[in-house]
Length: 388
Image (cartoon, rainbow, N blue to C red):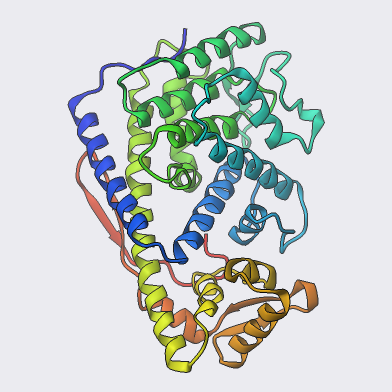
């Protein structure tokens, strides 16, 4: 027996429709804007999902290093276990994006094992790719108290087989609800010795990517979960009640996930609109100074708080290392970037002018409750390097 989808109340169906409308707006915007900045937005969104899902487990890296992982580069900061975890998660999510386009794909336990192996292969002591051999407990780190006990190990293979069957079954339930239930069931089964939370979030992303309205990169709610970890754990505790209880009502969890989808869609729309305004402002400034438009690729990243490296810029601008070096030196000479570090450790930050240009196009953040219609507007976050 697994957690199953109950009849959805009318207000849940109405919220799903609102989310679909937001996603259609975002999808239309991205399709109508074939400019190169949309590629930067995809990269940033992918990196934020990787960073956020790992931060929930205590593996913290900067967005800059998450972007480095996305692009197969070395971290700007030192190589740590957190960096290895982020690399592993990058590999798993990259595979998920590949599977999203496979017309012959069907869910199976081999895919689940493979994804988990990708995430944890840097530490074979965590038995990556294997079901756990015994009991498993989730503890409250500050107190040491047990907050959840998974089902017995001998139940795991049968429960996973049931989950795979449910994932492949035909149903009229909305994809966001099915993805939420897949997440809930996997995290409550807790089939692995480690990495169960990351695997559950990755499975939710896989279900969304396979059937969502959006480019798969924009389907995930992992960034939202990483920013709202306390609420995420609280609703799982409410539904789970400390042990394997698949008879319990999953509606509080589904409500939480639908709220996450709505707010993540709002965030992506705001970022997309801001990025277009920023791009236009920087494009006009480069034209005024008589500079090449490709320099936008460096200025755009620096403006939103990322550290720009020669390697990341030359890949985005599609230029050689020598041309990239000249371009970045030119931007420093123009007072648009500030150089930091030496040789291979060198990177570039936004100048005061660039930070001010970005601040001038920011919009207030609107945080909405899709179930009540209540809205809270907040001022944009102040500029800071490595903006999360």
